Image (tube, rainbow, N blue to C red; front, side):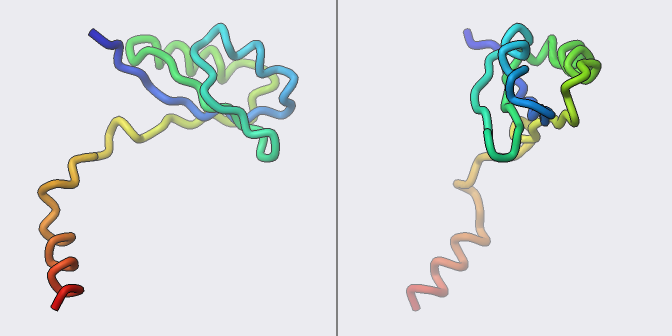
Length: 89
C-alpha cells in the first residue's frame, strides 16, 4: 500500500539551492542555522538518488538515516520493566 521511504540528510553550502533538491524526493525539513536538508525518497531509488545528490557542487556532505534499521518495538523491553519496578518500591 505505502512505498518504503529512506531518509537522507544533505548538508549544503548555501540554502538557495534547496529548490533543486526537490526533484530528487520530498524535502521534509530545512535547517537554516546548520544548513542541512532532510529529504525522503523511495527505498528502491535511494542508491541512485544519493549518488546523484552527492555529485552536486553545492552539497557538502550526505548521510543516510538509520531509522529504518532501528528496532522501534519497546513493548518487550525487560530492562525498562525492571527499572519501573525499582522506582515503585
